[in-house]
Length: 76
Figure 1 (tube, one colour):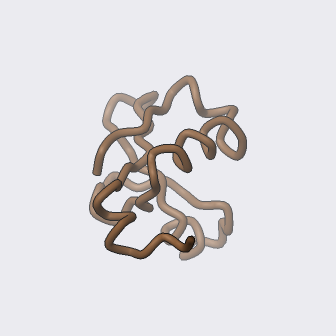
Figure 2 (cartoon, rainbow, N blue to C red):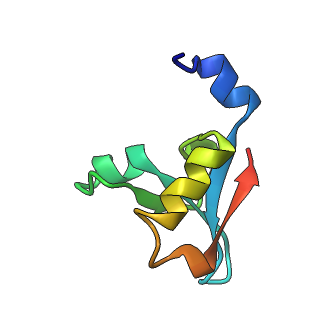
């Protein structure tokens, strides 16, 4: 079953990174805008990519594993 946008927002979670003091948020769009197809970081929480909690945790365990100690999944 494909997840609708409304379902993603209802179960919306984002990835927050805290290692630099002020939080930044993971955004696929920001990364692509700056030539990084895997994603990038922004201080604008409103443009963070929204995931199901399990998908965000999976991304931290795999694609962002080197940054996982500095990140957490938070509700949008």
